[in-house]
Image (tube, rainbow, N blue to C red; front, side, top):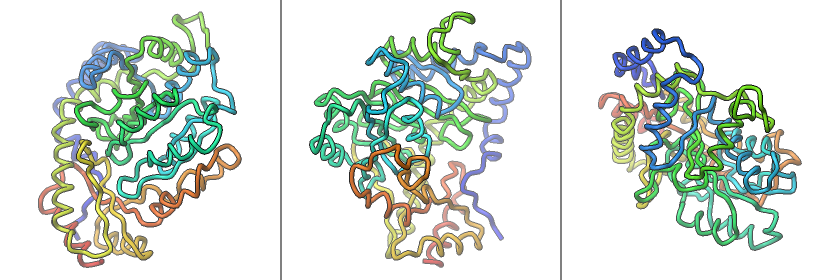
Length: 381
């Protein structure tokens, strides 16, 4: 039986093998494993790509979020952490790290419902929350560009300006994505990227990056990632050991030049799926906003009438890889009990968690494999 994987990292390695092996061999030759030359080169190249003044490599996407938020606490409040009364608005339909980072930075997450068509935070619900109570407690917004789709950054930026809020973009799933003519991660006060192996730009382990135009945020972030100081023995803040390894930076440098090509492949596969599945009733397809450049970290459909789980099992039996992101929204997780504010009933997030199913979006899928996915779904739906 032909297997179609959700993602095939071995296939991608073989496609880039010569470049990756060459970059790794350079590390083997110079043996500078911590903050080696590859880290600075990667930071410079990604800053140029994004159009930002600064990029700072860190150990993970989660650390990128935490350190960005803590740097903002130092800048805006003159304190190492936010207060528990400080509120930061975000989406409940995302990976745990987004809400967790807000808690670790000392603040309280405010979960605002998502828009049904994009899975991203509903900007009208942000306004609704800000106008319904004491907005002075709200200090910032963390929009998540989920599945590779940009949030409405025009409206989020407008809201932030009106209410004097910071914006930290969670770009973990959207490297290379754009809102209008600007790369995601270059629009807010800071952007947080993940280089987890499955991402659009992924390494051979954990890694992350912070992007910003703000010199002060960049300076504080660089201190926080190295135990809170500018030198080895002069810690100013409670910091982290969150350096991006030279080996990971080398792998990312090798893969970086393929980013736009593979993102374009993902977009072509998305077109094949929508065309091939458009006649099936009960399926809803990802919406590509006209002002956004969707990079399809996941190609996530919705399956109505409580059929999602049975469809997923039938596809598994046919050898088609799928995944559910996310089976539970964050406000249903125990870690956020009593630690977060639910801005409303969060009905769309809860409905999405029951209906979503991500299809194979390996950017090197063959045409035959793409058609097999379509035919298999037609057979089981």
